[in-house]
Image: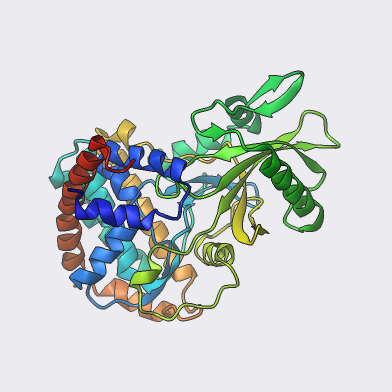
Length: 401
């Protein structure tokens, strides 16, 4: 008999692309942290049923915060930043919802990395301390090479040196004297000819008519793209664009389907009206990030909304597997992550229902809510491990085919 958790997962994913969902399930079965990343909906469904969260001011949240949803990117000003980088699940919610998911991710990820629970607990306590201190300061900050410290500084300096040709080398090849996307790549897939023509025409029209589009570029190739864990199964395309005026100049464009936030069914707070889901994602990202990524836009294709964004050689995440034995580096990264979350909430304060800065400052000053979040996160991390074991068992049995 199939486990209840597996049934809930199948129900949630039923409207996604069936062949891609199988790849999502395969990734989720791999380890508890991949499972956690792919089950944001389970986390919030269980959270509201538990009713364990202390009162908190309302804030704009990314919704799916975990240690791998931070990374580097090149902003509109062409500087490289380290910040939150996934807003698919974003919405208005109690500030603690964002924090307790992040704390749980530390416990789950550190356990998967074979890092002792005592060290995970210290990092959770550090996160809360830095988050609260930043809120109490009332001042949002950002992290770029000139302000970064330790490993994040080294990480950003390395990423800033990467060039578009490095990305093109990984994603493209020369065929019949033309540069094309590699479609036998493990995360690139060919597209049916009719759809390919429609997509190429759509992006050509977008480039010509949208002020956000890249000037003097044309579509030369496109493919289906697989990325992440939680978003596997949504429609996602990658375009190779060529500059029509500068020889040998290319860029890559990502077009990702925007679905309703998986947090929404479990929140009983009035949300603003959005004309379409991609508008929600960009509006909240605009509020929470200090500088937006380059070439960020929205489009409607076949009555479905999509987020468009330039793919960059500077898009990268901190690899905790590399630094798991380097306490000082982990300390600095977790400290930075906490500061960035608090800064995002301060930056978006007082917007369409979110708490004003004074309320967030008071919340940061009063740390009596810390223990409740630690207790829940530690307990739920154990639940994730148990749920993953049951899901992986069903997957191996072929119950998800």
